[in-house]
Length: 456
Image: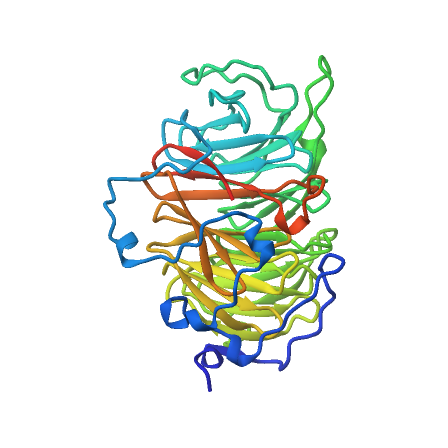
């Protein structure tokens, strides 16, 4: 039995055949046992697949980490960013980026949100928004980049009108907000994260008090119109947990909500009725990973959920049948991030142990184990190409080829650990450019009070 098989415990047998979520003309390649690699390094170079023309179009330098890199002088950090955003007076806990709108948003311990242009060379903000009375911990643009939502430890969710900010001059030292929020939504005791639904018509927020709040997305009123009433946007409150709700996701089809909590429960909820359809926990089934739920992701088909715990366990469950399919022991400490590739048969998990594991979704066998020097806090995929971006407390972003585990690029700029990362890609490929060859950007926020923009 291979080491990979030892780390996977099938429960309901073979994985179900799932609907395809791939672009027209995409050919899925399945792994054979002799193609699976446990670790990335020089010992496996003979078996690594060559990077083809599609990857070469990124014009990136191949770079396989070395001992010299690991032991480099920590006081010397090469700034490889495209832009740096220096306005916060404390750690930057939350970031988001919208490439179509050309906008970056940053929020932090100083209770401030700054809006930036991706293209403004002097790197001064377009807006300084102050409405929260505690740290901002989550930011999300809507589909068009016309609205931004912010979640704060003060228990509020603010909705901001992003339009009309070009050309504004902002005093970053001022404690006066350049604008008022469209509306301030209240209810949670302390917001941990905020999300939009796939159709962007609903706002969801997870709270420290075990609740999940849902509101209809407001639209910015016309100038001079009366202020919006927050009560008009209340949709539902989900109170299924007894501990902090650390994760929450809409399924890609929008027909279910998945929430995970420090109470160890993963719950699948009907978003319309608010009724819990399935509950997964080690108390319900002893085979399910123990510990609090710290990460989850929904397969593009909306049928499968991969969940991770603060003790490092992983479990694959069926959201339709409520069955536990398999459990995995791939991390030695808490799982921080899980993400499915939207168009390739891969899922990535990342943890406090500094490991990034890539699994083949056709059989959930571990394909690669990739490494950072410190905890990995976020993972994100290219929308078409098999590229994975990872962000770590070790102050680096790394870009990997998921097919063979090759480290393609390491990006640095932060002098302290990275606390958040967001990526964005053009919604349409430029004329003459294949979708797999489009370039995107990543924005990061760090413990050094800085945010940076990178090309990926």
